[in-house]
Image (cartoon, helix red, strand yellow):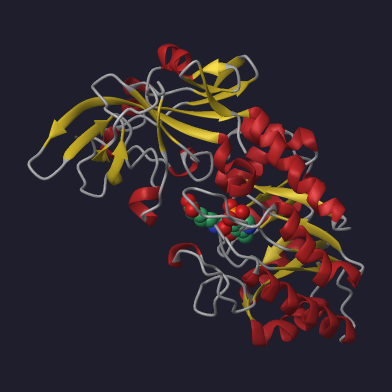
Length: 421
Ligand SMILES: Cc1ncc(COP(=O)(O)O)c(C=O)c1O
Ligand SMILES: N[C@@H](CCCC[NH3+])C(=O)O
């Protein structure tokens, strides 16, 4: 459920017409609905509570690191899951208290670990033995003890796109299942390390409960074994990964997901962390673009828009589907015809949709790519020297630019000509 709908045939974000934002900001731009983000957070929080889980929702900032998005969630009580010093600083700047921040990632640098230790964040999720040893030395040098989760790789197939599955043996993430008890014993013996938690994240855009069930069952067995070994596991970090509908998928509801977690893990006496990204912000965002021109061909029609693969990478990277909504709703019965929707970038992969049935579109018309709130602006680049797309937040009948479009002059000023040139 989201708060983008047609009113008198005009696509709106909450009470604001998309066309009015386009007139003020120019195209392309991302627009987010505050009410949708808040609703997703509440539905998940209620689901976790109904399942009897004492849980903190740590928003995976990588999905959408804009300060206004993080702050929206922080104000509702969310924490943050961060994967870099940049994200950690953003979470702090947005108002997330350090005691609600967890640090994940397979390649945290010594500087990043040092900064996390100094900041006194809640938990560091360690992904390898060398990282554990390095963290111990850094924590000892800082005179601190850090609460640590070992991120385990349960070797479970998440049954999602191969590029976003993370919990199989051959993936780079987490500690291999067979080595987990040994790594906890090591963690227990190292200074500066308090191994109080287990973390697990098996992939993104999961549309079935089965893989979660398999991973939770493995976590349950593991907690039993670790406790028998004298390791006091008090917290479980279940990662993120719950999918959202892009096309005709029907992912499990947050309540169903929470119920499964509760059934399998609820009696262990643990506190819980979850790290959802896409679930909270995915369908809270649109990428709005203008048709530059329609290019007829002998085998197909190309609708060339002013957004491109550098603005929304998901179709080029994962062949991902994003619904395309005309900003002016066509009258009922308007015939549709297949077209390829492409951007201006010099790559054949700069294609948002192939042979998509669309109503008639002409130069100047606005279209919106749906479900673009997660991993949209976050993954954008300036390829082809295109300015990063601005972001706009709508709340009821107000909107605000939450990241402006950089000017060409600002972009060019970033470069330096050496004095010998
Ligand atoms: C460790 C970790 N936590 C949370 C997430 C958020 O995933 P999602 O957006 O699928 O909920 C990711 C990304 O897959 C991740 O790598
Ligand atoms: N970027 C991916 C998800 C990766 C999740 C990050 N661990 C996507 O757009 O679907």
